[in-house]
Length: 365
Ligand SMILES: [Zn+2]
Image 1: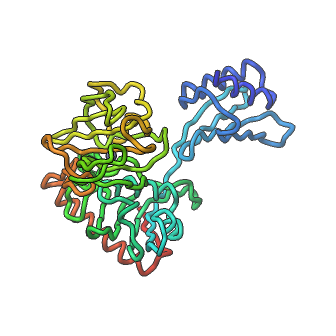
Image 2: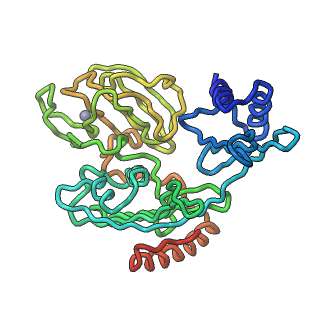
Image 3: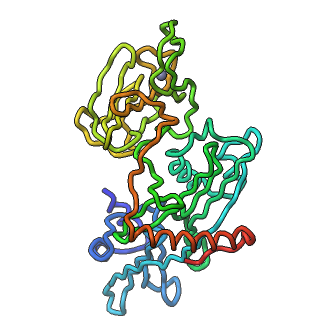
C-alpha cells in the first residue's frame, strides 16, 4: 500500500500512530495525496526553535508546481494548506542549422534545444516532413518555446509556441494558438490547421527502405509488381502508432501482409499497417483509436525480408503515396478566431525579430 511509505517516513521522524493517522488523513482530504515515496516526493521537516523541539511544520512537494504545508499549533493540532506555486513562464528562442552528416536531433542539441522540446518538434513536423529523407545540410530551423521558472529557478519546459523548418518542400512554420473555446492547436501562418489528419510517417525517425511505386521488383517474389505503400525500417517490437484517429476496420493475417491492421479515418482515408509481430491488446475490429495510439508492433510476418513497417494510405479506395499525398488538416479556424490568430501571430513575429538579434533575452508571459 502506498500509504505505508508515508507512515514509515513519519515514524522515522518520531511521530506516533495517532499523529501519523491525523497527518495522513489531512494530506488525503485537503491535498488529495494518498501516499508518498521517499525517493520521489520532496518532504521537509521543520523543528521550530531547534532540533530538540518537536516538528512543527511539514512541507511536501508532490510536484514542481504545488506545495503542501502541514503546521502544528501549540495545542498539537495539525492543519493543512495546499499552495499552487506561481509559474513564471518565459519564451526563449533557439536557432539551428543542419550540417553535413547531421541529424535534426544533433543539430537541435547543438542549438541548445532541450531533448523534450525536440521530441515535440518531431511530433509536430512529422505531419509535414520525413526527418530521414528530407533533412539536408544547410537547412535552418528555429523554435520558440516555454521555460517555466519559480523564484528565478528553471523548473521545467513547457510547450513549443512557434516552430519553423526549411524543409525540402519549402518553409514549414507552425504557431500554437488557444482558440476562444480554450482548445489549443497548431496553425500555419495563414491560420490553417497545421496538424494533418494523418501522419506520413507513423513511426518517428524510421528510415524509408522502400518507397511507393507502381512497379518494383518484389524482394521475396522476385518479379515486378506495384509497391502500394512505404516501408520503414524499425526493429521487431517497436510500437506502431495509428497515423490518425479512426476506427479499426480489419485486423488479421494474409500471406502478403502477414499480421495487419486497417483503420478507416474521417473523410475518405484508410491506412494499413503490415508485417506486425503482434497486435496491441484491445485493438480489435470496431475499436475507435486515437492518433498516436499503439495498434501493434513491428515484425516480419508475411512476405517480408526483415523487420519493418509496411504502411499504406488508401484514398477513396485507391492507394496513394503516403509521403506526397495532400492531407487534410484536422482543425481550421473560424473567421473570428482567424482574425485573432493573425494579430497574435504578428505580435509573436515581432517578438521573435527582437530575439534573433538578442538571443539571451526572452519574452515574459
Ligand atoms: Zn512494403
